Image (tube, rainbow, N blue to C red):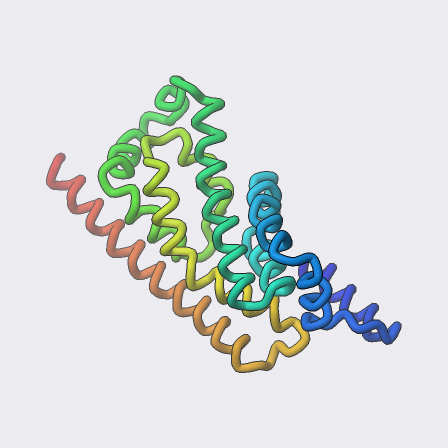
Length: 210
């Protein structure tokens, strides 16, 4: 996605065609309110087949600006996470627990008790495979509302940061981009610390039960 956008802007610059974010947003605005409404289900479908969420949210920022694009892209990503969980759950039917390795059952019990916080922390920690976790969660007893709420809250700052990056591709040195990068870095640090604390707490609880 990054290479495609870079090639697009480079080609526009060399040919003299205006393909700036402002021009793109003006063209999209002519479609009317259907454009952002259509982008939400498109995001769900594309993310379900493996298109990375940062590219989709950044694309929303490019098309609709940081504020609207962030809201549109974030909504699509949250719905995609829930959809992927439900897809696995539907395909697995009553075999979900049987498909889980025995060593994971204890973690499944933890998800049933504190699923919202687990999803919240994982959304803040960088490096976790977003789609894989969503699909795998369908084999656990994680509740749909826990997936939706944890994703909506934990992913929100990063979503608007990606939208800001997508909406400012022609000015990557802008204050908005610097703030976006700072937010992404701060979320990564906060997520890592929260996950570490949660892992210690879970380990202590397991030791006490043993």
